[in-house]
Length: 449
Image (cartoon, rainbow, N blue to C red):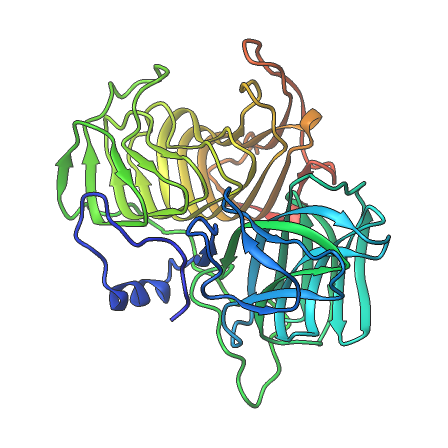
């Protein structure tokens, strides 16, 4: 049983048992398998090795001993193989140009791991660490500064290791150093803060223990395909007020409807409002749906269906990591997913039909963030644009295994670029198409049927 540091509380449904949760973790729609925001004020579930660690009043895990040669906190399962781990990391001080604050994956011991490090030199480096031997798999000069939050993400799949900073891949390499292992938060002759740790099984199901007699796979395991049809509701429930969700809400494929007027009018109430760290799964949202789902922090939407999108299907308002795994949306005259907060939206195993845009990074919100979206294994039909981003703010959109159906003239725009503007103005379109910088895909990533 993998430890999830979120309160498992249903807002309007019966409580979920540990056994039931374990069953859902290994379902075809499993996605996030571990999270910790340290909002409980402790490091229960983590094991310390060196350093001075404490959770501060803001719910940030701090390592304050800048003189410690190696300070580490480990969590998770030694049998995890193919997964991604993400955390927000804020360097507080560096003792030298080689000092580091970072994030680790596949830690097999306190000195053997893959590590994405923010260095005192201002660079970010993806490393294979084996005791005193450190092999750089790749790096980038980012001008890393103390006091600034960075979102680090390490993806491990077979022998392929990738590192991302603020949603942008900065390094990728191949290594056979470790086939499985835990996650870790690390510093070396530096101090820093850590928050919002998320481990994702990267394609459905819990990470598996490597077979005893075979090597780890060199390619990612197959993932859940996008659903081929729309589900039939098990029942229907009229909703008169927004349903708050903290922990996990499993609707059992019940249809919920009744909020708003079914149109595009602004400021409609959402059907569901998810607190930071909440998960909404197995829900059908019917019409009228108001403003769909609001995520106030990191959230996960698993097998959620929108039969007739109103204002938006979901709006990502706070946090740094938002995952949409499975499900689908149709009849969205404007956009399906609206990204107002910072961080990265992951959309996978999803289908969209008859929509203006699948994803839009806000181009005129009151706060201008750098936003990112990763779109994988989706089916698109009768949709004008898959993603719209603001390149002047450094937004990125990554696409893989996208299938566009019924578009013989290839009129669907994959990635549209806008110039983001202050609140009260309208963004302007400045281009579209792959560029290797903001819109990231190749012809092999897009299939037409």
